[in-house]
Length: 288
Image (cartoon, one colour):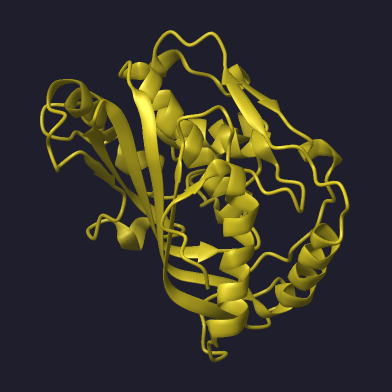
């Protein structure tokens, strides 16, 4: 396990592989008495490492995409838009954007319950929603230590299809740059990890544009970092294949086009320049 306290986005594949090696060498398997199950009903046991944090400089146009496998980047931005800009919990709104991520958690009323976008859309002090609150505070009260969003609402947890994995963001302004910390209670390394880091690095950039500031460090804190038993052999193969490549894929960069204000931001504004579409697609079985 390396010291991941300060790395550039240029090294995200290194961070990514260190996460895997940390779980693989230092993690512990759960018992079969777990909530998550595979489609065939078998308990989805996981190997987990408790307490992992990394950070990188998010001020350049390089974005934290792994280079050892394909990542559905457009779906990741669509989900980000659904949660943070639309602040919706209606699954059809996400399907209308072309993303099916939440179909398996759709309730009979067409929502994911009182989760994610529903929580972000709540009044916060004098602001109409949590996103408006952090933007107002960054602009008008930048030295505050209370610039944060929280989706883990104890009163609403029983009404959620899935309790939030990434539940908290905290924002600080240091020397004219916005520092973002993201906290995940639980992080599925094989499936959600890569998309989530990419999503929130883009959110960081969009909020910085709205506030007319630069991005500073991006900090990502995970309590339960894990992969599932049926994923381990594929992960080992994924990294062996990548590390044996003589010529590595290009670093991914991003442009945010047509930006006027955060409420007008659209997924199509993100222009990604990368080899991502050429990378191998690996299907990891979903545990629900």
